Amino acid sequence: MPATGIAEKQLKIHIVKDDSSDKIISECAEHIEGLIEPNPRKLKNFLNSLCASAQLFNMNRVDGKDVFQRFIIFTYLRLYHSPVWRILERQPNSLPVLHRVLTRAEGEKLPDESGLDDETQTVLKNFFFNAFSHVLSGKSGDGDDNRHGAITMERAVELFEQRLDRKRSDEKFVELFLDFVEENYTLDTKFLSINIPG
Image (cartoon, rainbow, N blue to C red):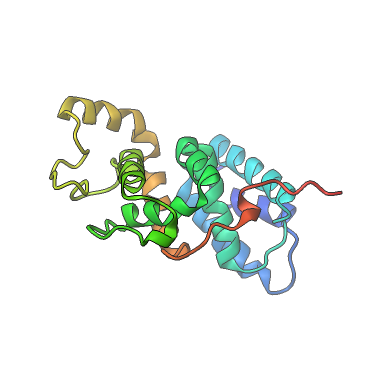
C-alpha cells in the first residue's frame, strides 16, 4: 500500500471527530506524511504511536488544529529525538531555547524570569544545535561559521550520513515547529505526563 492516504485513514479511525474536524484531520495527515519518510511501515509505526499516545494523553479528540499539530510535533520529538524530548520533559522552560536555535535567533539570552542561567542556556543551545545541525544552515551561534559547530568535516559527514534518512523528516519538523510553536509558548503539561483515567 502506498504511503499516501495511510495517515488520514488511521486518524479517521482513531481520532474522535465532529463535522468540522474532517479538514483538520486531512491537514494533520498531510503534515504527518510530509514528516515521516515515505515508507508505509515507518508511517504506520508513527501513527500507531501517535494514536496510542493520543488516547493516553486524552488527545484523541480534535480540539483545534494548533493543539493537535503540537501533539504531532512533540510525538515526533519523543520518538525521533528522545534526548531533546527528555530535556524538554524535565525542563519545560527550555522550550524557548529550542525555538531560538531553530529560528537561528542570535545573541540575546532569555530573560532571568525563564529560570535558566546564562551557562545553562549556552549548554542547551549547543545541545539543541547539535541535534539539528544537519538541517540548520548558518552560524552555530558562537561566532563559528562551521555549519556543524566545532566538529571536523569528517565527523560532520559521518553524522550527516547517519541522519540522511531523517534529514527530510527533520526539515519538515522544523517547518511545523516554527508554524505551530511560538517562542513564548509554554509546554502544556498534557504533553509531559500521561493522564491515567481514574
